Each structure stands twice: as structure tokens, then as C-alpha cells.
Image (cartoon, rainbow, N blue to C red):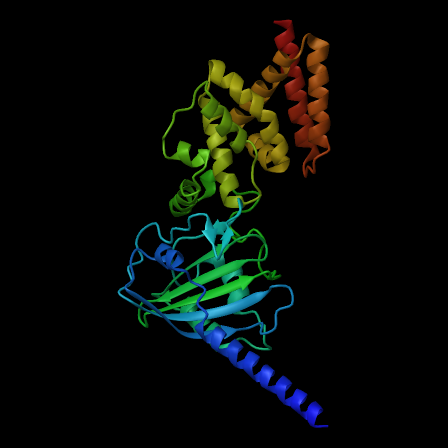
Length: 357
């Protein structure tokens, strides 16, 4: 009996130690690394975590929903901040990751879906105290917010209050917020094109791409000129694979079209190699645009026809290549089949003209 009592006492003591250790660890835990803190603001003299909430408590598959409040001092937001450099919270930011610069509250219409899916969600039966504080700041004037959506289940929301010198950091990992649009920014839809964006939206998208350190970033920053060279070939290869992310898709499509319509000679022949991949990467998006813009309809028709003409050893061989393209096009989901058929007939007609010349 004494042995059993001793074992029970030891177990209770161990549990107490674990609970106490967990409480201390939670109180001491600070998710913002030094490099991450520096990337948020142009300058800030002090960060001190003064409150936090864990809205999950017990995690089974690595889920976390935490809110941290930091006391700050002498914060300068700075143009072009935050500077998310490709990694956050120990993970690489994925190709289609969406981020924003600091924006002034109230929350902009295009961001409402994301922000409110985070601050209004009831993880503990009701919105928490810090969620309510964040919601009040997001609905009033003179505060600032920015965010990261890295994939479909990792979200980070930052809200800064100059009046109180508070930074709120909401960290959601391995949780899909069902109320949130998976593409995040609702104004960048499958029917959004570059010319429809405001100057502010264009600048935000361009700045984001510049930070990606990709060949598209190099081109946007004028580090090379398009021509009959390997850099241009690599650039066209990337641009012709339209991403699902609405904002980046707008820019890629615009850049491709801008290069295509200004090209001639060997460059035009090079661009022609990528018209088919461009069309097939997002059939509805590309077809909708070119059907409404005669100059681009003619451009795509001519470039694709000339490419298929050059691929053929004779007329029949060119038509064989055309039929393969038509099959690939029509097996894609197309909302307007008539437009697809009209475009294909125009391409076939132009191939025939080229062989008759």
C-alpha cells in the first residue's frame, strides 16, 4: 500500500512539474525572431511581449492559433515594408504565397475576407479578448495592418496601433479557415486583368514580384533587355505558366502580351513557341481577354499559326500539330466553347494561308 501511495505521489508531482514547465514555457515563448522583427518595420527601438493567447490549447496534428501583443517604441513603418524575404516562421514562402505591405485601417474591402476570417473565428466558443481588441482596431481609423497567407492553411496577421504602441501578431498554422477565400484577395479574380487594377494595386503587385528574386523580378527591374537570348527564353517560359494566384497572374499575362506585341523577327519566333503553353495554362482567362481585344486575338492567332507552320514538314504535318493543339485546348475546362472553336478555326485558316503563299 505504501509503495502504491509513493507511486501516486510521484505521478502527481511529475504532472505538476510538467504543467508548471508548460506554463513557464508558454509565458516565455516568443515566435518573432530578430530577423523577422526587423523585416516588419523600417525601425523600432523596442519589442516586448506583454500578453498572449493560445486559442487551440491542445494540438493533435501541429495546429496552432496564437495571438501575441507586443509593446513597441519609436516605430517607423517605412515605404516598402514589411520586407518578407522568402521565409517566415521557419518555413519557405511558397510560390503562390500572398503578402501585403502595411495598409491603413479600416480594413480595405479586398482584404476583408481574410482579416475577418481570422479575427471573427470562434476557436474557444467565443472571440477572445485579443481578437476583440484587434477587431476594434481594424474597424477604426489610424491603425495599420498587413498579412501573409502561405498556402491554404498558414496565415499571419499583423496589426499595429500607433496610439497605443501595440503590435498584434496572429499566427495560424495548419488550420484551414473555411470562411477565407483560398486565393485570399477577392478583387483579383479569374476575370481581373492588369488594366483593371488601380495604380496602388499595380505598385503592390510589382513590388511583391521584385522581392521574389526571380527572373521576372530581374526583368521588371530592367536588369536585362528582351531579345533573342537565353534570359528572354527563360523569362517567357515562366510567364507562360500562369499561376493560380490572381494578382501575379494579372502581371505575368500583361508582361507576356507586352513582349509579344512589340516583338518581331527572331524574338517573335521565340515568343511564338510560348503562345500555346500560355493558352493552355489558363484557357478561359486567356480566351476571354483575346476575344475582347482584336489586336491580341490577331496576334495570338498569327503567332500560333506561324509556329505550327514552322513545325510541319508539309501542310498535312502542320495540320497534325494543329489537331493536337485543338485536342489539348478542348479537353481543358472551357466556359465558352464557341470562343474556343472560333479561335481554332482562325488558327487553322492562317496555317492554310501560310502554306499557300
